[in-house]
Length: 596
Image (cartoon, rainbow, N blue to C red; front, side):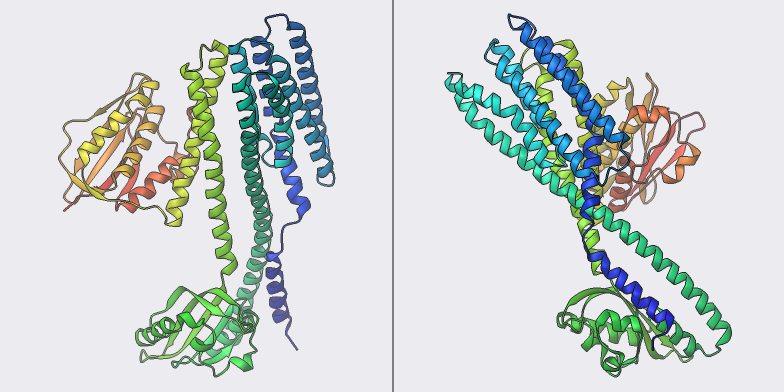
């Protein structure tokens, strides 16, 4: 008969296995609907603004009545969409009705697309070449802009884009112009490409929502595990007062432990097995006792290496912590386990037995892999269309496509600037992911540090000019050579200089100093800004770390720059720090070892 604590261990193991089940589709659907409706205000405002711009551009000529009629349709649709958003927000039972809310949003998207499709079909044949180019570009922008709005549901995006492009393609095909007919053949390919991108984003978002719910379940199970461990610690303390024999303490711990525990003699034969080990590997204790652990518990491919490590452990008597190896269950399934081997040594410093602990980390490693894959995939999938959008906006702002209205130019300039900020964030996220996963490759070379500093000042002078700040070196830098990756060192300097320029007052100077010591060289970036708040100093080099001040939020930034600098410098053998100046401002410095 099992004891209550053993039964609790088995129940917890069963609960842990339930993590392998998929997340409830209802919760995933509710998350998707919530994401779609959360973006409706921005989509409504953007559509209304673009409609006003289009109406202003197309207002001239004998079709002004149709423009007014179309504007009325847009206004009516805006009111309906606003009412739909307001109704969703006031709804109390969103999850049971998520499918209905999704259908209503699909109808709204179709109506929005059809309204613009109507504009393309009516206004394109009736206006001059310039208005036709403007209208064609506007429709393409609306199709591309629908991706981030409706990508959580690719079907809704496909309906929205079809409502815009189908009437437009028909007009192009029947216009009677050979060039327009050829463009009409290309537009469906553009539509298919955008739908494919939306579908891929849909898959990524869906995986993310499922992972989030899986992580929630995992957190609950970890909480239960922590509670169980706390209970076991109390039991162990009580046993320590009651039992004098150290062997009895060890046996009690092994019996109650939620992880697999073995005791092996110096020859590697199994002496004792706890219930969690039976559960993990599928063997009964009677089948394991007396067997050689390296032969039974490990995959054949790694047995030789495991035996070598075992012999070194017995000779040295040094514990092995956190060793990961592939193990084989009784049913032949291979799992990845994390092993800890603790030798029990007698007063003569001889190993008498070894306590071996093991836990299955297969699901943990898979979860980490999926998390990294999700981050990398999401960043790459966003970067590709975002780069195209920024490139298109740059073409517009440069005037290549013709004279642009001042109000339109102001809007497109804002869009380009914010698109670039989003692209910078994605690039920073990719850098952090590469660093933390160990995939970032450095290419060190012997560099004249002063030349790199001078180059960084030249590269960042234009950025500093935007804030009316001057960059300058202090004194005559010493001739020092270091071994570092030139590209990454310039990245560190760019982050430090851009931060200093952003937070320095207009008309001030950001100074760069170099100071050599016997074995290293220190580079300092000195600004005249407000300094680092006391409450923020201990987390300034953390990820997404930004001081909570109004001017900080106004200046913008990803909050990843200093974290990336710290990791890059550590990979190059250096370190980074900062100090507030008594006269005001901050000095950020980093040290690099001299090249011998």
